[in-house]
Length: 498
Ligand SMILES: Cc1cc2nc3c(=O)[nH]c(=O)nc-3n(C[C@H](O)[C@H](O)[C@H](O)COP(=O)(O)OP(=O)(O)OC[C@H]3O[C@@H](n4cnc5c(N)ncnc54)[C@H](O)[C@@H]3O)c2cc1C
Image 1 (tube, rainbow, N blue to C red):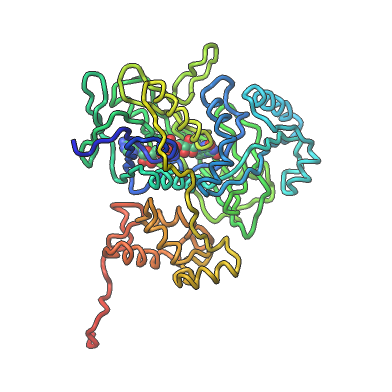
Image 2: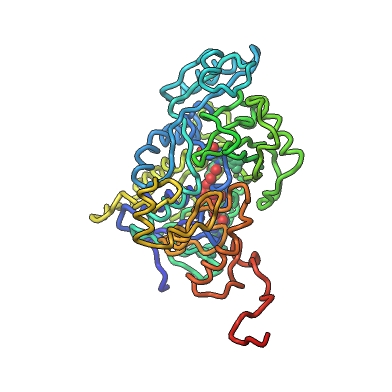
C-alpha cells in the first residue's frame, strides 16, 4: 500500500490535534484524518473555553488526573504555540447562606485532587473583585490556576505546529473501518481509500464509541451527547472581570457567566441529554434557562446585551472509573486495549477535555512507549509556532508598518472586528488552510460582532474564490452542500449593449 504511516489519528478536534503535536516530536510518519472540511469544528469549537483548575472531577478518576496534570502545561504551551490564553483565575460563587457548605466541599475535593492556589473568600471581597456580581453573594471559592482560551485557536495552533513538524492532515477523510490481520490493525479504511499504519488512534469525540465498536472493543460503551446552550453578549455593552461559576449540580458545573479572551461575555451552558450527535440547534427553553442562570450570578444581564447564541455537544460516555473503590461511571478512556493490537483508544472526553488535552497527548506517548514503540526524537524539532499578525491587536505604528509591507492589511473586510484582507489571505495559505467562510471566521473572528457577518460574507467569498482560483459558486459556508451562492444573477462584461 503506497500510503503507509506509523500512526494515523482519527479525528481533528483538540484531542487529536494535541496528540499530533506531541507526536510530531518523534521520528514517526503521522497522518491525522478529519471527516469534515476543517479541523476543530465540532465540540472543540463550541464549549466554555476554560482551562479548569481541577477541583470539580471525582477524586481518583482519570478525569481528575488528566485535568490536574494538564493545567500547569498551559502557560508554556501558549507561549510555544502562540495562542490566546489568560490565566485569570476562576470563582465558584455561593448565593445565599445555604450554598456556602458546597464551597467547602469543592475546596476539599480540589485539595484531594492536588489543586494548588485555592482560597475561600468573603462576600465583601467577592463584591469588590466583581462589582457586577449578585449582591446576595455569601462567599466564593477562588482558584488562581483557572484560565480561559480560544479553544479553536488552541486546536488550530496544535494542528499547524504538527504540520510544520512533518505531520500530514487530510480533511474530508472519514474513517469507515479497519483492516485487522491476526488481531492487529494494519490499515484504516476511509472514504478516500485505505491507509496502512502500525498504530491507529481513536480521537473521534462524539463518534469515539462508533470507532471502538468497529475494532470490536467495549461493546457496552456508549456516547450520549449532552447539549450545552449559550448566549454571547456584546462586549461594547457588558464586561466581566473573570470567570464565575455557580455551585455545581450533580450533572454539570452549572450555568456560569464568564469573560472570554475576545472580550465578550458568555452565559451558559445548559446540560440536556439527546440521542442526535449532530443537532446543535438552540431552543427557546434552553436559552431561557441560560438567561435565568446567568442572572442568578450577574443580575444586570438582559436580552438587549445578546448578540449571538450557540450550542455544543459533550461526548458523555459511560466508562467506569478503573481506580479500585471509586464508584464513578463517566470517566475518560485513554488506553491501549488488549483485545486488538495497534490501537490507542480515547473516548468519553467531555469536560474537562479541552483542559486535559495536552496531558492526554502525553499519556498516549507513554502508552506507546510502554507498548514497545521506540520513540526517537527528531533532531530538528522546533517547539515554537510562529504567530500571525492580528490587526486589531496592533497599535497605530505597527499597523502602519504592516500596511507599508502589504497593502492588503490596509483593507478592512469586517468592520465590527477590524479584520483585514491581509489576515484572510494569510489564513487561506496557512499550514492548515482555511477554505470555507466558517473556517475564516473561526480563525480571524470575523463576522462575530454586532452585524454577525452581514457586511463581510460577500467580500470573503470573493477573496476565497480568487485565492483558491475557483468559481465563487463553489465557495461554501462549511463544506459541501453549504455553498453560499446559487447562480449568477447578472453577467457583467465587455458588451456595452446590455
Ligand atoms: C457545552 C460544553 C462546554 C465545555 N466546556 C469546557 C471547558 O470549559 N473546558 C474544558 O476543558 N472542556 C470543556 N468542554 C469539553 C471539551 O470541549 C471537549 O472535551 C473537547 O473539545 C473534546 O475534543 P475532541 O477532540 O475529543 O472532540 P471533537 O472536538 O468533537 O473532535 C472530534 C473530531 O473527530 C472527527 N471525527 C468523528 N468521527 C470521525 C471519523 N469517523 N473519521 C474522521 N474524523 C472523525 C469529528 O469531525 C471531530 O472534528 C466542554 C464541552 C461542551 C460541549
